[in-house]
Image 1 (tube, helix red, strand yellow):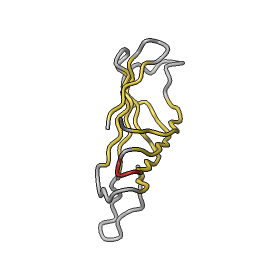
Image 2 (image 1 turned 180 degrees about the vertical axis):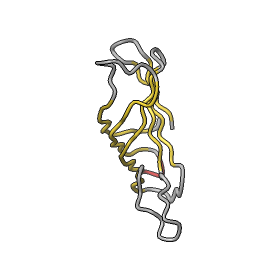
Image 3 (image 1 turned 60 degrees about the horizontal axis):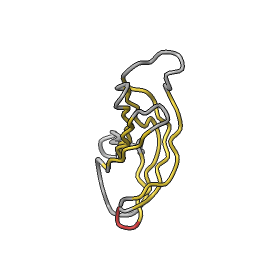
Length: 105
């Protein structure tokens, strides 16, 4: 799912929420699950990425969760976001907390 937001700076922000492994319907998915008991590898269940179309800055969830409800039509996203590319100077918004509801249509 991708949501476009217009910020006070006239930048267009795109929020992308994705389930990358193990979609099983409504529930809570996490960015950093416990390691698989067989392989010992942890595979992120979700991705949360925010892109700024004006400055070309990108942030991704370092740690967080995505709650999916109503057959994928709504839920909440909560994550510690960190800058991954783009301008990283002082005051450039390197890290922040994303926390709130989302809804399709």
